Image (cartoon, rainbow, N blue to C red; front, side, top):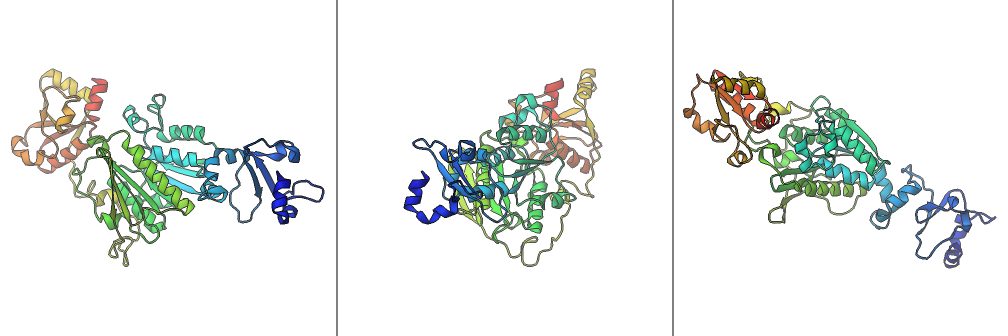
Length: 433
C-alpha cells in the first residue's frame, strides 16, 4: 500500500520511512483502527476495503486519540467537518451540564458518546420512579440512589474515555462561579427560574456560552446565549413570571419523548461550538411543538440595556435568585405548618377533621383524588377566597406539596389562622396510606 502511495507522491517517502525501510518514530499507521506496530509492522496484511490511516505527530498539545478511540469515533473521523483534529477538539472540551433530569439525560449521553473529554454534572437529587418516564439515564434498580452516582455509572459504561466530574450540590450564588469557571461552556438543563437566571448571569460574568433548553407539556425551546456577541437569556426575558403562574413539569406534565428531542438539539449545539462548525442558534430562538411536529424560529438580538450583558450592566455579581424570582423574600409571611400524610389520615379517621383543599387541576383528579377534599384549582383560589373562612382549619394539598406550599403562604398572608401543607402531596398519600 505504501509503495503505491510513494509512486504517486514520491516526495513524502522520506518523511515516513527510515533509510532501513522501517516506519519513522513520529509516524503511526493504523489499519482499521489498529496500530501496525501491533499487527506485524510493515509486513501487516491489508485486506480489500481496509481503512489505512497515516497519522504523524503534530505540535500544539491537543489530546491524543488512542487506537481504540480511532475505532470508536470512526464515523466522526469520516466527516470532513470533524476528522481527527475535530475529534481531538471534542476530547479536549470541558462541558458542564446543569441538571441530571429530562434534558440532562440525553445531553450527557450524547456528549459522552461523542467523546467529550470532561463532562461535569450538577444535581443533588435522587432517582424517583416518576423520573423514568423521561430521564433515560436511570433504571428501576437505581430508585432512591444519587442521580449523579447513577449517571456516572451509566455514562462510564457508555464511554470510559471521558472524565466525569460530579457536583452533588444545589447550584447557588455562593458556588456557581467556582464550579462554572473550570468549563468551556454550560448546557442548561434546569427546571426552575431561579437556577436558570443564575446560570445565565454566571455565564455572562465568566464569558461562557450557555446552551439553553426548556420543556413544558408538548413544547420545547432551544437557543445559544452569551456567545459571539449574541444575547443572553435576560435579553429575551428580563424578569421571570410571578410565582405559580407557569407550572413546573412536575405540576403541568411533560411528554416523555420531548426532553429527548430538545436535549439532543442542545447536545448538537454544544458539539458545533466545540468544533466551530455550522450555523449556531445564536440570535435565534427555536420553538418546537410535539403535537403538530412544527419547528418555528424567532430572530432575537442582544439588548444594549440588558442589566447583565448590556453596555452599562447593573448586575456585576450574583444575586439572591430565589428572592429575585419572588419565591423567597424577607417580607413574605410563612405562618403555616406541615402535616404528614399519616398524621392527616389519623385526624380524618377521628372525625375532627380540618377542611382539605385540593389545588390541583381538573385533569389531575382523574388520576387520583382524596375522598372529601374540596377542589379549588390553584389559579382560581385567590378569586374564591369568599368561599373560605379565615377562622377555620385547612389542609392544602396538591400532587407533590409544591403548589400547596405556595397557597399556604398566600393564605397565611391573608390572615388565615390555621393552614397546613400536606407534605409530599397526593403522591405521598398514595405511597403510604
